Amino acid sequence: QLQLVESGGGLVQPGGSLRLSCAASGFTLDYYRIAWFRQAPGKEREGVSCITSSGGSTNYADSVKGRFTISRDNAKTTAYLQMNGLQPEDTAVYYCAAGRSILATCGSKLSTTSNWPIWGQGTQVTVSS
Image (cartoon, rainbow, N blue to C red):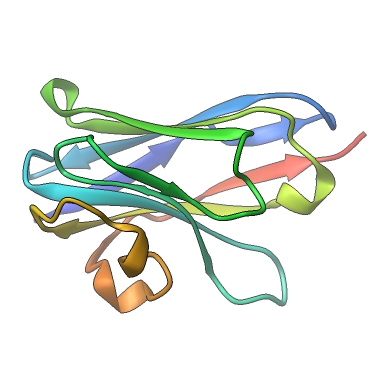
């Protein structure tokens, strides 16, 4: 069974940092692009960032550009989302997702959740003083 498990969420003050992890179970990440999505209460799930299977290309939503960094370690079958400068509007449940692909870019796939068939259960990030 192909599974993703997120961890690293929690409560942080504005301006603080968190690093989310996404561990794959039942498969290796080598040929999968990875994305992070988030969903705030009452809002639609939105794409935050993605990284290609090679790690050679990344893409970010405008709202997080310059503050968040996505990365991956295929040897550890884990992907990460480093979040700096967190603000209350970043509060949401964060999900990682994967899709099998060797395309050189992933940004065009970030806007549609159906492009990502494998999902984790989510981890809560709360930014509050």
